[in-house]
Image (cartoon, rainbow, N blue to C red; front, side, top):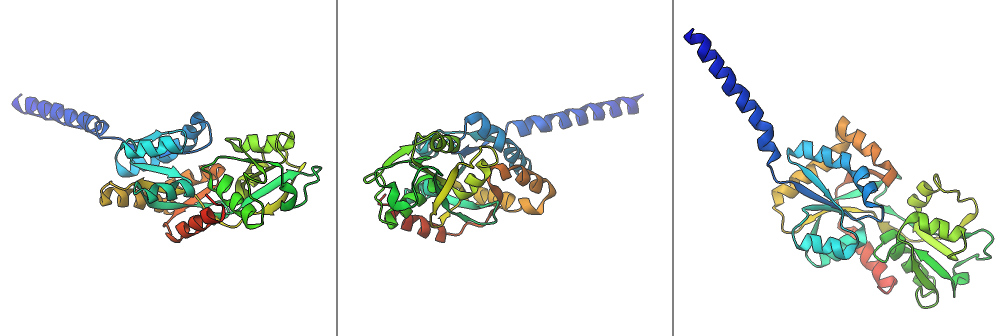
Length: 287
């Protein structure tokens, strides 16, 4: 009888310990992952949730997606310690690093297998616009004033070719890729520009047969996974190891396949020479 009581007591204790483990895990502080994107918040959450869940599983810690709207809010969120890691374009990262607010974790490699991309400038086929000189006095649709491919690279290209964008031509900001394409198609803008990889992806959703690319910019760096500069080195390195190892893990590869619609193939080691490219583009574009 005594042995039965002891066994029952041990079973109860074991059950309590097992049930307590998930509760302890639930009380771990969440890693907050910020995503700066022109997409709608609902789409951002849908696009990034699998990535967040994967990193959470590998780190053994909850990962919570945060969506600040715009560069100013992202910078404030980082300054106030409300995110630990984030995904931003190379221009935004450059600005944050210049203010000692960010360090690189990894760089995105796009679906073309490159860590750089080029912007394309497009017009309606029947617009009569044949070259950059024809854009003088015209209304050009950019995506965002803090865009790398949607503003910095094409503006630098125009200045390099002798057109002072914003002075000799009008600058409009559409806030998303679809607005830029439809705006040019409908005649609201004389020309538009965006990342060439995005243009190809969008052409699968929007009929672009009436559009024509008249110029292609120089290279600009792709997006960056960053971290707050005041985070412990060990925490950053652990996060870095998880994302860099994704292609070597069957589950990680599956997550990456689902991210191709965001032009992401994988994440690779960050190369600081990317900042030299951004710096040069800023100088050329008078920004």
